Length: 254
Image 1 (cartoon, rainbow, N blue to C red):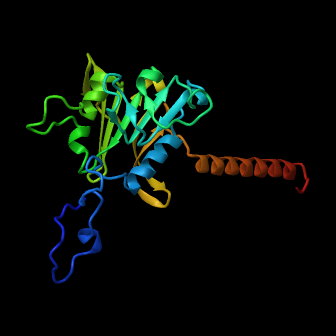
Image 2 (image 1 turned 30 degrees about the horizontal axis):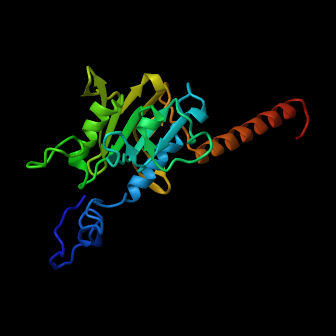
Image 3 (image 1 turned 90 degrees about the horizontal axis):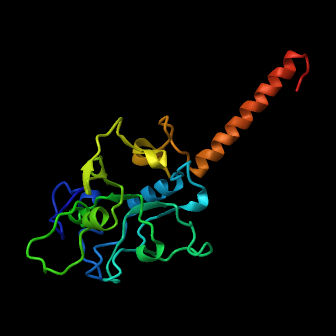
C-alpha cells in the first residue's frame, strides 16, 4: 500500500493514479474520532467470512457474526466500544431477543464473548490492533483492541491479516495471554468450532487475490451460497447423465 504525503508533487513522466490519489487513510475525517470507514476490501473480506462461518456443531440459529458493529465491553464505561472488522459468536441467538437484528453487541447483556475476532490491518488501525500504545497518553483511556480481546473479553482466537504484504497471523489464549499459533499450510485449526481459517487464492466477487476463508476438517472450503448453488446444479447434472447412461445400457434412449 502506497503512503505518500498530499498534495503529491508532479513528475515527468507522471505517476499512476494508484500512487497519487489519496486514500481514506491519508485524509482527515470530519469526525476526528473516526479515522475512516471500511474500504472495499474490508467489506468484501468480511462478507466472505460471514457467508462461510458455519460451525457444524452449532445450529444456524445459534451462530452470530458481524462486521464493523459496535462491541460494548465495559459496563462501568458504557460509551467505550471496539468495532472489530469481523467477529463470530456461537451459543447465542442469531437475532436479538430471537426476533430483531442487532444494532450493537453489548457484552453485559449478551453474556457471551466472541469466539473469534478478525482484524484487517490498515495504516490507521495497525498499532491498536496489535496492542501498541502511543507515548504520553492520559492515564485514564480505553484499552487497545488487543487488550480488550485478550484481557477483558478473553476471546479464544484472534486473527490479523495484512493484505498489503499478505501476512496472516493467528493467536490463541494460553495462560491468559495471546500466543501466536504456528500455521499449518497457511491456516489455523479451531477444534471447538470444527473449522479452519486460512489463506485462499481465488476469485470472489470478481476479484482474484488472497482471501481469508473457512474450511472443514479435511481442508475443503466452506462454500458460499453461490458456490453451493453451483455445486448442487453440477451434482444434478451428473445424476441426470448417470441415469441416462444406465437407460442406454438397457437399450432405452432417454
